[in-house]
Image 1 (cartoon, one colour):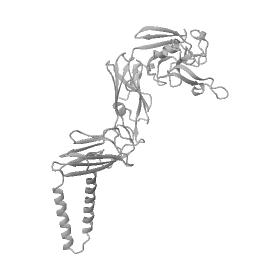
Image 2 (tube, rainbow, N blue to C red):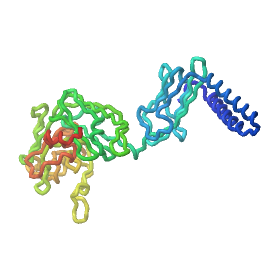
Image 3 (cartoon, helix red, strand yellow):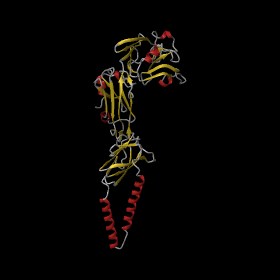
Image 4 (cartoon, helix red, strand yellow):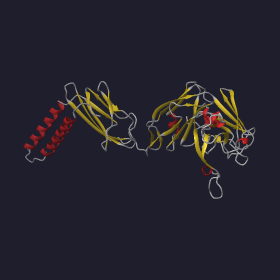
Length: 416
């Protein structure tokens, strides 16, 4: 960004300074003794005179010249004392201009947007003091590289409305060795006042939740203050961000694999009972508390992707238009509509490969089906509890399912 029209004057001033330096260097080569001493004395006097008439404006560019691990957030800034800025230009080494804004008092300038990682930037600044005398400053710095930085991909997104079971889940793109430092740079709070604690599942994943489900209608705030935090040796955080999301009504649905029914409650009151078909005796559904993490009006389900293959290595099933599918686990457990099974199985037989099936129609276009109703009335973050299945309880890190840990177990996984 350019402030004023002083680029031509800046170039000329730079050329003049360069010329003075060249003449000074050449004058030192005289062998005439007195003549050389006179030249050096004259040059010294000229330098002293120039210094006395120099601008009082003092320009400061941050990061400092030569910095090679600069922050991408708010590190870049130009300020001036005893003067005002008249021109600031910032660009990458390939010549791409960086837009920026000058403060109303013309005392500071900063980029309008976050910088890129692993990029070298050049900054040129010009200022004037009260007498109109110019001061110039230049700097070049490089932002922290992707190899030397980490970011956390988090869910849910900013501004979303989610169910009461939705944890804050952060997956880091680098393994974290100083978990205490990283967790210390993250704060999750609720307007309900519930205590929120983080739990590390491994070196890359950190989830946050309260002891019990979030209070309906509350607002949850996630604050990432990781800029400059060293998460591993020579690997630094770059995120500086605050997001909020809203907790919706309290919906919990309980699937009884033995009775083959699902009871849907909202705010503790039963609103619907739905016949279901859970996993077959050979492929039972996991027990436990599961959280809806994704919703698809229609999706493909191929048994080969979750280990169900025939003798030829092909999937035991490959249905390309499964209606009203909602993910409950990373390993492939869904609650979804089923149009290919006989209507008589729902409420009477468990026939799936581990999913929970609801009666539905091909095309996902009939709002009167059980599959459509449940899809339309569910939020990401709603809880689905499965009980009375012959399978084990789902592991807490298989999906967003940390609710299957006791509060003491959960807190034991905190690094702070």
